[in-house]
Image 1 (cartoon, one colour):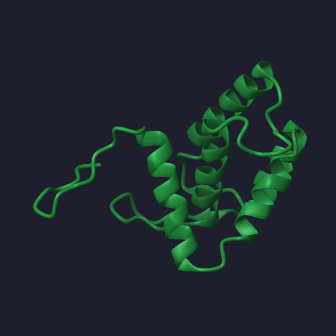
Image 2: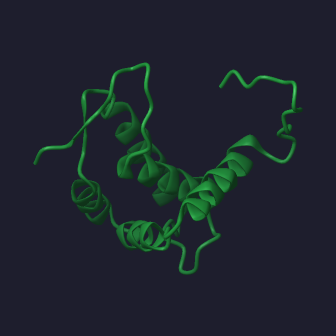
Length: 125
């Protein structure tokens, strides 16, 4: 199946695949926060981490996979991850909710001591 064509390296576009990867990263980084927990054991959590890392590394080419391809891979992996992803994606119904998702992810990955930029500071992410 054909994927979405990425834009040039200098431009950035938010795609369903990128949002999905953010959601999966959030699920990985906050084990036990979902009931039932799709990553019920340490070994399943570790396997999912390796799976997620492989996904991130493998899509560094021109085409991003379609959402149904990603959900199929998650279904094969198991652990209700495909259902969690589909539910979370369907709950994003406004730009504000997408912004909140990115803020939550920044808080999770940045930790409790992540600093807020002052008005005159520049972010070099």
